[in-house]
Amino acid sequence: MARYTGSVCRLCRREGQKLFLKGDRCYTDKCAVTRRAYAPGQHGQGRKKPSEYGIQLREKQKARRFYGVLESQFKKYFEMANKQKGITGENLLRILESRLDNVVYRMGLATSRAEARQFVSHGHFTVNGKKVDIPSYLVEENDVVAVKEKSRNSQKIKDVVEAMEGKIIPKWLDLNRDTLEGKVVSLATREDVDLPVEEHLIVELYSK
Image (cartoon, rainbow, N blue to C red; front, side, top):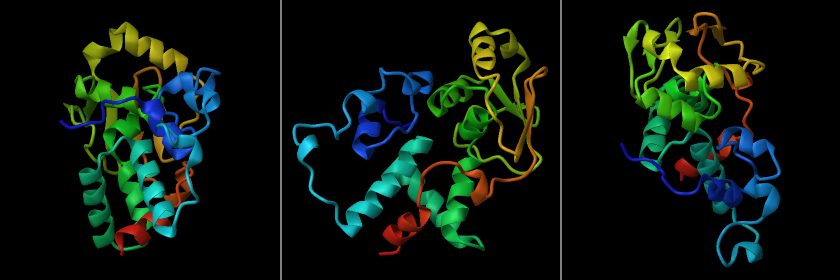
């Protein structure tokens, strides 16, 4: 499975804001954006004002990086969203929020989407009682996502659940912390997405 293997801190610096890709580290003084608030590379501190296309491109890149999606996959999601009824940009965000790795993160069962992706890939989660090890798996309304029974005794899982105990779970999801089992009450709406993404700019970019 293709994935980005470089420094995720470079991605945050390139977008000029925290994308919270490294979990707790992003909230400390060690955060690269806090220490070096300019784009990476030798010309990072001398970038010119971006064009309209540049602004649209950066918004698309930012959304991709929030969810940890590569370009080809992101384009497929856009094509799916464009075929669905409703507003394309909102459809796109709903699809991205429906990824299993994102749902695991949103439920507070991982400290970051990258960690959630790793947990899913290692087979620690089930959907409706069946093991699913594909992070891009799209959940549907009423699906039940749970930590696999054998994985509930994992110290890593226990540590993460304890660390994320105070995390606010969005209303479209429900989690039983005792059984580590959650339910997709409904699919996410635009109001449920708290990320600073201007999806209309992404639609404009792909509509050129």
